Length: 221
Image (cartoon, rainbow, N blue to C red; front, top):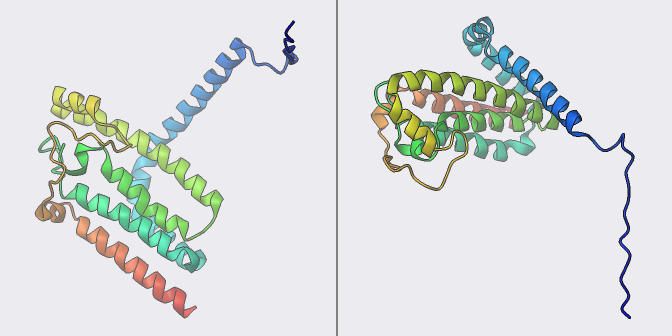
């Protein structure tokens, strides 16, 4: 005879195991909350207000970094911000807005490299605050800002470029860079003149001035 081990079964109370209807209710509630959040980020008046006050908000953000920023995370923050700025410069040196369908440079790997770069630029500054709650709040807010703005831009570009843009969207990821280069793209494209036209050199100088000023300020405190 051979010994066959008994299989131990554990039964859970029925009120603990979620039913199919419970899961459907949860998904429905989540969808409602997501719609409300997206409605806020697409509110025309709120968007206009943020555009008009972005310089003022930027000044407040920089001031808070000087007051509460910690030098311990300076070099990590510097590296993250400048990685983002390099991505933005590469994208700005490839993008001719509304003139051609840009599928060259970083756009041959990802459809929205500017937003990826912008996220990293600001994220570097957020790291100076060394507060996990602020970091998580920034990630959530930027996600909703980015996803809603990109959807509006996609609708506009679809109307301008039509089917070629739809083909591009089918082949290239929206936010996550891919290893496969878009068939009609040129990964190594970059024109300094286009970068100047998009004023990205001003953003680079502003970022450089901030980190130099923060370094000096932190050493003097």
